[in-house]
Length: 487
Image 1: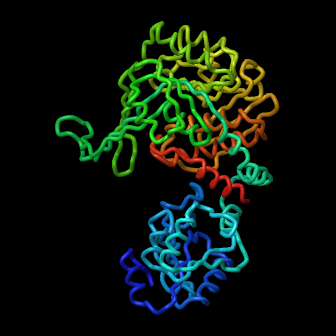
Image 2 (image 1 turned 90 degrees about the vertical axis):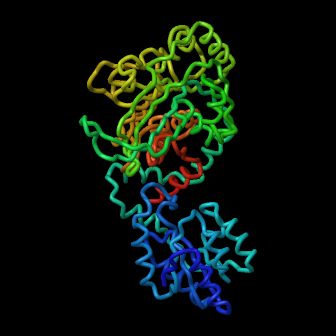
Image 3 (image 1 turned 135 degrees about the vertical axis):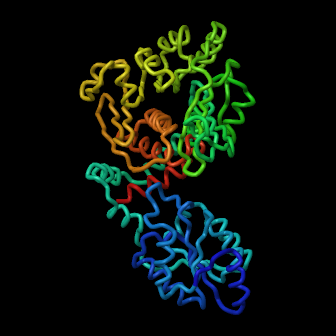
């Protein structure tokens, strides 16, 4: 009953050349009556029914799903009498399965008539037609596994209440918001960083010293800092004008494959490297080192940056990572600049206490984490109720709080938003993800509650990967939005 590999698919077809074979494909995480009716109708039309199950690593309904692992989902399907064979598909779609199995009929639910949910159906139909197969949309009543999942998921009362508010907003409204962004051109300035990951196998301790002994297996260089921020933005807008410094050939390599990012290289100053030694088995960080603390820019460098910024007429996104760019005459110029400024000022272990938001006099939007606000305010606590009153020079504010969510404060309201992704793999770049998405959305006239909601969701999705290795795409975010507001 269980088809172990691709060869078994081909063998099944060759063994039953004269029989009518049908294929159903999906995640099948939470089985409901709609699934059973779907399988029953499919089996009534064929001699052999094969069900392929998407492996967990290719399920893109959001970081919370699937609820059940591969083994549990396959095991449950084995108990359904209408199913003859089950195949665990370790690919994003079923095109390869169709080409190997050559089913006479491919079965999908009625919901696929109007929408190709994951963008795979077009390719699947191509292979189906090539092998002289046909598609049938079963007429069973539609039910939502995602809705069942959301209703029974252990959301906190805060999460559930927030999602109920979001569910009142039609999904088409979210689509329209991102459609507006897709025509935008943005300007972004900041410091590039190279995140170097050195994967190591721990072999024990050294014989003479109490030090960990490791064997290096592979190295990986990833664009961080403003490079990662620009790539995030490039998924949502038409053009990104990136003003930065470094080696042009290297920056282009780090930016690839985003062709809608226009690089405006102003200086050839060296790029900060943050090297992280990683345990290969679990991708845990063992140690981090940085090659230098600050760049020293001269008057000529600053003049060239100012020349580029003068060309900007509307607004600018500032990614200040504390590597030395935003100082002296450039900082003075930015503070006098009359365009709208969206600013993120980062404090880390290298610049702690020396890169504070207070160096900026005015901003349309200032986004910092809790510690960065506390450092700038010189306070161990943040009085959120009075924060906006005390910082009138910043029209809008975000306080990101990691697992505790975020607070977005404007002249109109103060919005606390919980997180919707419980566990993350790596928080590197998650703050940048929140900042970029909320900055882009703040540029539009929309329901303000949407801004931190999307920011939190995008940051959580980003945290499912190692650092900035994978930039979450707009299509993936929208699928997660559609899933999570279905409550």
